[in-house]
Length: 432
Image (tube, rainbow, N blue to C red; front, side, top):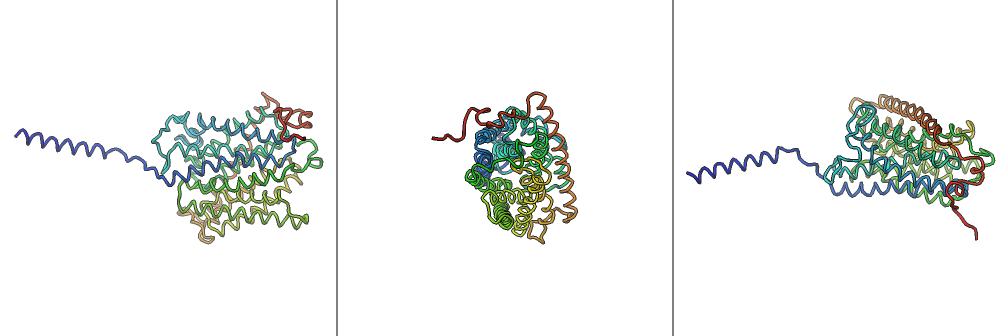
């Protein structure tokens, strides 16, 4: 009888233990293949800024300002990294409302070794998103090189990331208002390029022109550096777009293919236009066309097929070239390295055209249930308008706030002598 009692109760114990264990929510399964690819993509996206974008911009400026451009990129990458850990990631991706996330993950306090985001560790997802937060304000540097005060740049972009970049990221990728509208932005046409391009244009107008603009400016001092930086951007962009699939899957493969095709097509379009117009194709021109093609395909890269990539590459190269001419030549705005014309126009163009190119007509993956090309276009258009308005207003206000504490521009003598020696005590080149 005693043995029977113990056996019966032991069975109950085992059943209770089994039910208790399996009543807990299943832990998210980390996929090693997905994790390996996003680890690689994260490194590639950081590689886009350091050294890719830094060298791309450095080659385009005067030789007396090359160190200042490199310094701005490096310091910005460090500052945004810390800002992202302290509060940026929480406000972008924690549960909040339609406009901004919450404070529940300040200092990434909710991230542990075992927390997951889909099939990858959350620590990796947070780092991947950090590299996007780094490159977005870094793109803006091209609009105000050779004349902004270093301290002003740091203060301005610190608040710009918090007030512009972080909310827009939450709107699109953190479950905010644009996500609820059904906005399509696979890898940052709105989040990265529309914000950086618009912010760059507003900053260039607010700061004013460089001395001698446009007639007395020297040409890019090193097309070689610019081409090397551009090549790094092209390679890194595979992590930017294909990595945004957040897994090693068929979507990542197609995103990589269309990214490459769009970049190549836009490069050729830009080269042919210059060749026909000036009689000679330039290295600076063809690599600028490449960036235009990459920016244009970014929001669409996870939704389109090869026909869409060819279309976006063609129109990205063409319209961004026209935009450069219009902004610099007609409007006389000194957006020094054409950030709005290339990134802003390209990103917005891709954001709008994905509504049609994602359909089966162009071998795309299709739209959400109940949507057609025109209805999705209206969603995309509204999202662009909201983002551009938000970015314009707050970029201007942040600049004005910054100017209360420090002068935005270097003095005239420093601009004449160059920022390298006067701001950083170093020279990019030393003659024998």
